[in-house]
Length: 513
Image (cartoon, rainbow, N blue to C red):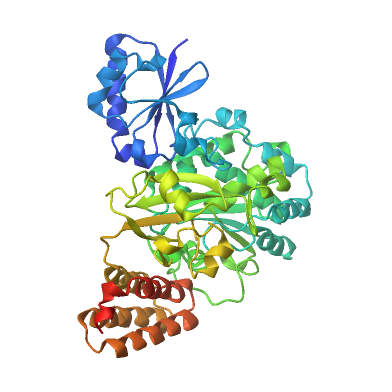
């Protein structure tokens, strides 16, 4: 039998040279006349080790990384395809601290399997949730999801079961499932990892959602900057049609569900569900007034479930294992797991899936290893560019929706961007206003104009011009943006601005005022 070597094909591994390494490995195999099979996988999420090669030895995956082209010949000399010793040998992948202490419910196959092998997907438990759902009444599926406590993983954390119930109960002959895969928040990449490492999981979740609410059509609205994810998803969709898992007769059940992949417009605002629906309909990405909610009148005016990738990818596990299995993870009203993404000035950047309840300190130091620069971590921004800057004094806060709300922060998509003590927070506050100004859809005045005026006021504060008056003006402006904006873009931009001023006044020269 050939020896098997596993090399990631996801975007990050490729950015670090995986394709060049693949060519070098193939050349070595040919020159040495070896019987070695190469399987392209997704990523384990340990990005500081990419490209990470694993080989199967006596049932264990032995890891080597990070690998460069110059290492390939030496690895073969060391017999690494059989687990041979080498300076890059990390031992069994499952025993690496970053990985072994996770609770991987969504990413349990990521890095282990070929993401486009439907047989490997099924061998790992895939399609079990769908099979069970097809034997249940639609209302029972909705009840299972509701009882699991799953909340939307896209930012607002709205209970998924309630949204599904609303669409399920809507009296319409046409309904839709829309997957929001327009992942645009800074420091986030969990959606991309699902799509590139386990695309059938997302598609299975969408099919279950369609069966539950009575929808026969689904759309994936994919970030345009994700071309590899697009290619993988397109192939995965085609495979499911060929296997009879999508189309007119889902797994012989007589039920019908189609999926279409659409590329996004390249605008941050289209990550908001109503702007996304406008874009999906071929219009300019612009916020809709609510009500009506998309669950009542969504895509093409029909009842629509809009969930993000990680939300839908959580569904198959809930149907396979049951709501109580999923609900056993987490704390309070935050049930299940969340993929936390570490980025910025961090030693070990990547994705880790954990149950709600651990603290920022644990993530930053037990998993992230502290800052990459070696300087103390002074602040983190959680939840994307609209999230508050959390100071070191609050790093003992539990990663829980309600706990974060109590300190004026939000978990959002689970992205954590790390900054050390050298960062200038006045620059970051100004950037928050600038980002809002650039990405605003322009529909409402507080967001469109307020963000531009906000940049100007912050500049005057830093320059010491009428500091007290401008601080008062900035506070009033932020209240107006928060309370009068149509959408979170303008409504949440005050979070990073005011948290930066509150926690880092010295960067605004306020102590000299």
